[in-house]
Length: 341
Ligand SMILES: Nc1nc2c(ncn2[C@@H]2O[C@H](COP(=O)(O)OP(=O)(O)OP(=O)(O)O)[C@@H](O)[C@H]2O)c(=O)[nH]1
Image (tube, rainbow, N blue to C red):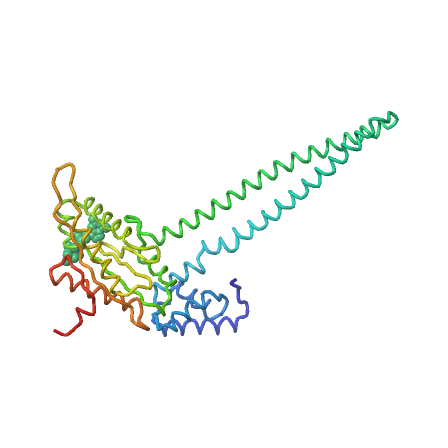
């Protein structure tokens, strides 16, 4: 939990440390970078601290995107609403509902016993005033029971509203990580998901770029271009496992990061995607004309020990451009493209 530091000297020291950390890592001194770095040097969030240290231990690059992911995950409003408002409120509601339930059970028992006494008193006419008193109390209890019932109903309804709020919060967090056109992750979502990858394992990546996409846009219009992007995204989505990540990096470029899989496996998947795209037959309905064969160029690379994600993506990007140079509609693995001729 984050605390506010009211000691001026101590806060000044932390602020200096935060600025030094930002300077060391070439981070722009903007509010997001400052907030994350300040919390890091203050040691007030173990999760945030261990995420940064894990990255540093793996020689990873502390860049603006990484910091923004940490900000969204550990500091931003959505997270705070969950941690400081929704969860405590839900706990209080649960406790209150339990207390009301216990009282209802208690009242039921009292009413049951009073009815028994009332019945027993039936035999004794001289206890008429006592009997009416008991009936009066039974009525009171029954009224209070129905009042409590409506209170329980209201609280249960509030409980459902809290859950709805939580779902909406999660959805808005997911939307910030999602590419609207394709439903794949966007660049930020990809960076965020990568945090969960175990860097002691082998991971590989495939960079995918649609060939001559400008011609599709120019010849058939932007809407058709968008449709092509969506179709290729759905081929990619269907090809990967739940452990892997697929993202649209922008325009007509996609990336797949394969968790705990070497290039050999990535190569097979890349070829499968390439062949599926090549098979697409797209008819433009209102002109009744088929689009020319669509193809993609794919670059494949594997993460070396102590290598950063950025460097891996660079390698895959270079392999993809190699595939373009070699005539497009093909897959290139980076090791091959780097071998001396
Ligand atoms: N429909 C559509 N087009 C986009 C989108 N984003 C970028 N583009 C277009 O994608 C095209 C990319 O063209 P280029 O970078 O020249 O590449 P290319 O024509 O695919 O050629 P190569 O990559 O060399 O095979 C441009 O015409 C962009 O306007 C998008 O979201 N939707």
